Image (cartoon, rainbow, N blue to C red; front, side, top):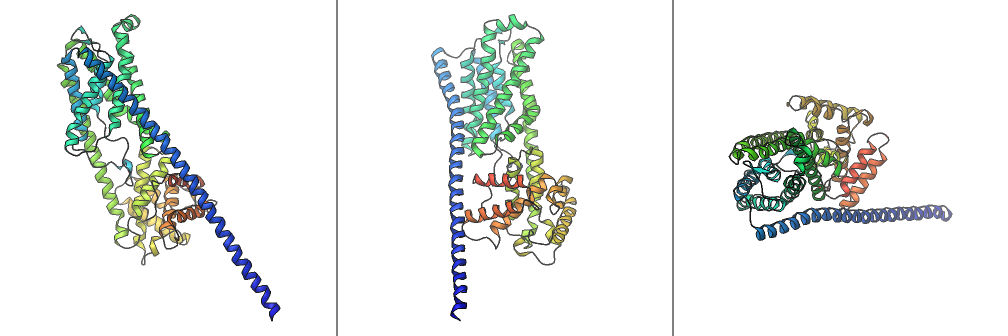
Length: 475
């Protein structure tokens, strides 16, 4: 009897030692991963901080030099400086006052880093930078006075929003100062010395030069805007820059064209055309605000519809919103354009709507452990419901394709499926231990299932997003 007990006791001891060994290895791996994540986050924070310091420092140093120079030499052609300064100040003020509801561009509680455009202020600054003549007489202001007027007018335009408690972004002012200075440097010295007229004459070539210069200036502004947004949000620079470049043919083209027409018209007719030329940009800004308000209302309606599963007790509170925010971040990491991100966000908000067809709710709303046939049924019913809501057909397609093999799914459906599984793993009853450990275990399970259930590219993008510590915190 004693001899039969000895092997069993030894086996139990060996099993306990093996469990302890594996537990220690897992804890050591989690500690190393957390340490590496912390180092990476510090590195990204330093790079983002350096970008902000570089942009703000350059704009601030240029502003100080320009203000000192203008104070020393005085303001030349004060009526033109006052007219264009008023245009910039008004454009900056109306951009911030009575701002529309938050755009859906930052789904999941993350604000859109681009904000609302200020076409009137931008056109006024560029028009003054490219002003070579005033009513038939040579313009005598130079590059530094252009910077002074832009800085003073932009700060004056921020007084009303600050007094009303509206949020303001100094990044817009810094970008405007740098882009106006760039345009003035490329135009004013050549025009005042007569070299531009000697090279291009006084015909259409001048107009072509102005348009080319404005296009290059708009490109520089897009680069700066994407860099500041990258530093502020941690999102990948490439998709941010692509979004900025996609917006240039719209509002950017209107701003550049108005600035060129303004500079050429004032050169011949004086300052009276300035308020007339400002009217189209005011209408553009008003239209943009109305469109932004409609989009925000539309998204709120979809979010309210998605909450029906939470109110009925089929899914945990805030689950749809969490999946939508994290899915949008993963989509941005994978380089999706803004329209495709919107479709992805809407589909993520409504991905569980098919659970309303179930007689009994799934525990904690977790559909991933269900049989494939049941998942397929829920997805198809969800897609049928979404098609009746009036949202784009692409949204319904993403919802009804969630249960398909991932190699047959569109990218948006792959993202929603992986993110939904992750949130269920870290927030459901199976989650144990600290939040960081639960997240690492959830990612490990997703990686182990990449051969059949999840796209490995999506899973790695999800891990990258989670490493930034912005999205995906378990409730």
